[in-house]
Length: 375
Image (cartoon, rainbow, N blue to C red; front, side):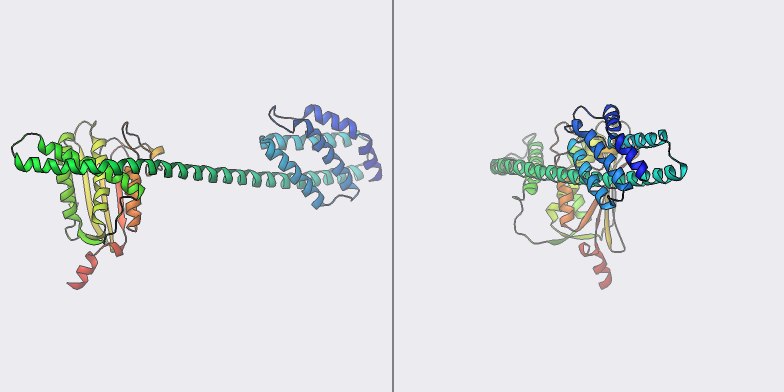
């Protein structure tokens, strides 16, 4: 091998220069003026590998150094691999031009390929690791920034809404007095209903900010009775949309939890269903199903209105995401928060035929099975 390594030493300058001329480098690569030096280091590493002066550990260290540079340069990994393969090809072409016997040339080619393969494996692996770490750090930074912004926005919104609720409560109270004093006065019912709708929206903001949470006890409540109250509350909206409400509710199903919070969830989902039906022609249907299977209470609310695009289904529960022109983007986020606080889950499926929100509550949330055990 002495003859072969001497031959390589003699042609180092020419090969490195050819490599410098043919190398692929991005204009934005801060290390582009030094890439040929890495090629030179690789060339000398091959020579040292022939002389058994270079080990796999030495190759690994050089690979890590180059991978760090390539990561800092933020270049396409394909360009890097191309340049390594270019260096390999130049060395192999050089050896084929020499007058070496096959007994020397073939083992030399095997050794060169081995050297470059070890280098590439370590370099690409390290480069990938560094890229993944960078992405993880960026993702963490974005998540923290997003949470900080949500916190600030939530504090600002909750402060405003909290102050807004005081005069709203007074207006609701005086509206009720006005209705009692003048029961035949037109439009009072509409005003009272709209004020309750506004108060409901205020409650959403307060729940998001946690300022609306007060000390209270959970209770056992009947789901059918709850839906009867909700449909009476939303009656003006139902009439306005001209929707057909179809219910299949097990009259014995009960839940344990904060009744007002669960009520808010159902109001929000049914309101969204009515919004989806508003521009639909033909029959407009909102379906409500409540059942209990194997102790698990399942509640689904569906509508045959405008479907939710598939690419949006995964983000509809994100805070401040909305497709409505005047939407706040907190409705479904609040629903998810409330249901998870009640040890439940909520999912959504949407097609041209139906959009269905399905909520499930574990046996601990239901009391129907306890009643049956007592019968």
